[in-house]
Length: 158
Image (cartoon, rainbow, N blue to C red):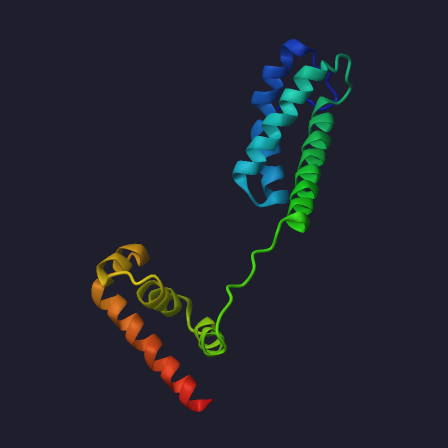
C-alpha cells in the first residue's frame, strides 16, 4: 500500500489503484451493503481522480476516500429522490368478496401464497408451478392443499 502522504503523479495512478482498490472497495461495501455498487463507486472515484490530474496532492488516498463517500452519498440521494417521485402502483381493484379473500391470502405463508396465486389466479398447471417454485410436484400439491385448508379455517372463523 502506498503511503497516504506520498505525492502521486498521474503516471502512478495505476500503482495507487493496485495498492488501494481492495481496501476502498471493502470500505465502500461496508457503507452501502452492495459489493457491485462498491466496485462501481471505487472505479468511478479512480476515473475522476485520473481525469482531475491532481498533481502535487499531498494525500491521494484521502482524496479517493472522500470521493468514494461523496459518490455513495450522491447515489443514495438520487435513489431516495427517485423513490419519492416514482409512481406507486395502485392496488388492483377487487370486488368486496375478493378483497376479503385477498386479505386472508396475504396472511398465508409466502410459499403457500405463491402456490395458490400461481394456481388459481394465473391458472398455471401444477408442473409449471413446480418449476417456478423450484420444488417437487408433491410439494406444490401440499402447499396448495395446506393453503386452502388454512383459508377455509379463516373464512369459517369470520
